[in-house]
Length: 306
Image (cartoon, rainbow, N blue to C red; front, side):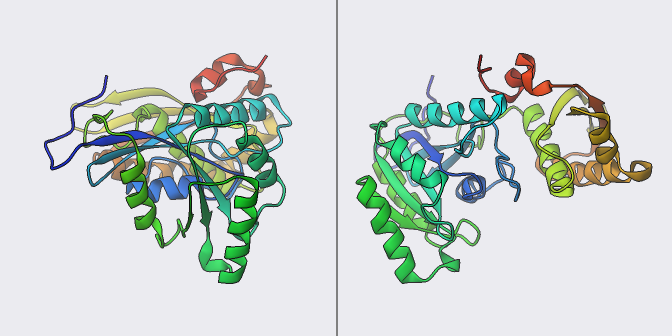
């Protein structure tokens, strides 16, 4: 049920905006920028976002619910298929679709296939060219023209999710375009992700940042215990699942050095978000072929593809 917005002049608007695009186009960075807080993890490693994360922003009289979808790419594994299916499902459930393209990479590879797939999606669509600070203006105009030749986008925006350039114009457009109606979430809520899951995502981000070259995608983090303590602190126990003993050794590091560094970085960020002391305990367990376990998919918020 939608929550009534506070009394403000003019009718309130609300709606869901699905961000879709190739891997590493900057979707999570943009969601965090537009929401004004960290709701989605960011990594230079492609395919970091695995399930749809909703970030909630208020702009003028509008509540904009951004759906940060997994990057769309050619799937090779079961997990890949679930992620791509989740991304397209998010697009079809939204009031408006925002295609994010990395201006440096242009329409090569996955971007071209996504444009083709969008022809079967009937919601309003806008094109957002990201990382414009790294590309010449004439190249940006040519890229926008080429994309609009494939699909007649309702609007095209040129932005930098990194420094915020062009983001105000984008937010103004969304706030005016979404349908009139009450807000879906309380005014102070910025995400629909449960805190246990967000905590697991933050640790997964630190794992990727630390081991992006050594550890493949065969890792998953779950929050197994969350205990609010009488002294105002919280004790969190998390398990990092890997598929082989060799991966466990990489995650632990010599003398436990790597896991300590990951735990420390994750704990610092969790302290900031929760605004309370955090006692974080990380464990690494081997679970062979966890990528074929339906329970792990449910934990990630994904449907298990048969």
